[in-house]
Length: 112
Length: 115
Image (cartoon, rainbow over the protein chains, first blue to last red):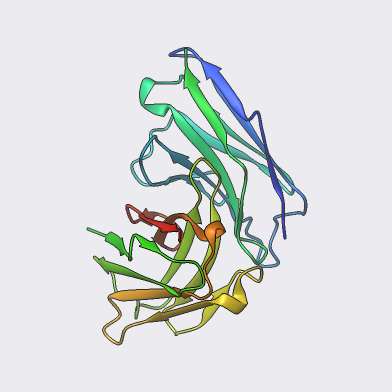
């Protein structure tokens, strides 16, 4: 199975600060169809995961544009440009290029 | 408006079969390209993809659990089911269903395996 390694595991930020989360894959996530099936999710406390980013860099419907995704191959980054209080929770990356789908271990964002 | 809702027994004993239902509205699983997945999350841990079924009835399983999983759908294409046989304490988790590509999730149902 593809292993997704997220760093850091815990991130503490002040309101307005910009932060980045890394997701490194054990294999390239570039599919033979030319797509890279890398997603980012936010799980707020007590809630279901919410998709933020799909196909590396595409913003999900209704997701604020302070969220952005980038990367290729095995290295990917989620950036939050100006953290807001509602951004606290656990962020997960997920890959769907290789079966079975796998998730990273999560990055917990705390607000200082 | 797309909504999904999971339902299940809440608690069951080890060695029993867990039966889960995902009831959804706002889309039809008969639409080409549509997929519904099952994912679970033990308390305080990350997410694990379990299985999926698509509009054509094709089924996909996580190999680590494949021998114990069965995913199916109803003929009206408004419900998807998951069965897990021979459960044990390690199957205690919140179980989610999600519409692919994971843009809509249910609220989750908590399942506890305990004697």
